[in-house]
Image 1 (cartoon, protein in one colour):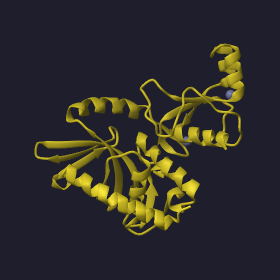
Image 2: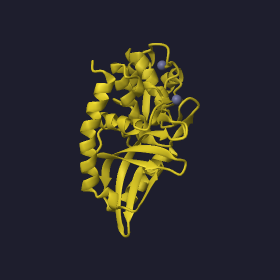
Image 3: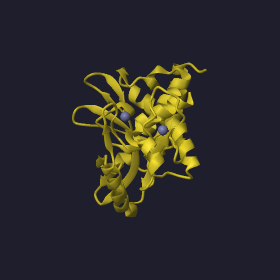
Image 4: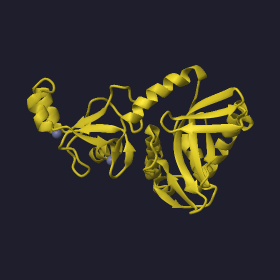
Length: 255
Ligand SMILES: [Zn+2]
Ligand SMILES: [Zn+2]
């Protein structure tokens, strides 16, 4: 296993070059204005009539006043579907015993933002990154995953507005997409975990797709009855859970 400091350094070096090329390719430093929209997941760069749009994932933020880093997956105020992709980084951190990748928030110096963004870039498919500094002197780091054609922006806005509408608020995890589970599933017991379709945290979901899972017993009843019906639905008593809770339970069952 690589020592964290070695891993971080080599990842940062690799990333530095990629990021420089990215900034150069789009002339990002030439733009005079930028703004981002949580609802649409778009960051827009503007200069006069020229506009450039990218889809983004929030990675985390560094507070210059408290000198702490906060991962996006633990930022309950963040209203964003894609923030959960950062849990992939946490999982990688767990496997390799890299505490900076698994701790929700910790004290650090200023360099931490680019360091963790470089690691995020290594683990999540993206084309580059961007940092903004807001009026509270908070540095917010984004991975930019895709350039969005200007003609497609309006359409994307519509799609994303609908997605945001569907977010629920979990007591433990804040804003999250809804998931549906049978009453027997929980974070402590291995009950089995049957899914409507194969899932991965933070994945893209079509309008009609919802994360849904049920236990072995419910699956037995469902197979016996050749599908869901009134009787076995009564046993399943499907309830609402948040996306993070859903994947916690899935993890318990895969241990
Ligand atoms: Zn069940
Ligand atoms: Zn939750």
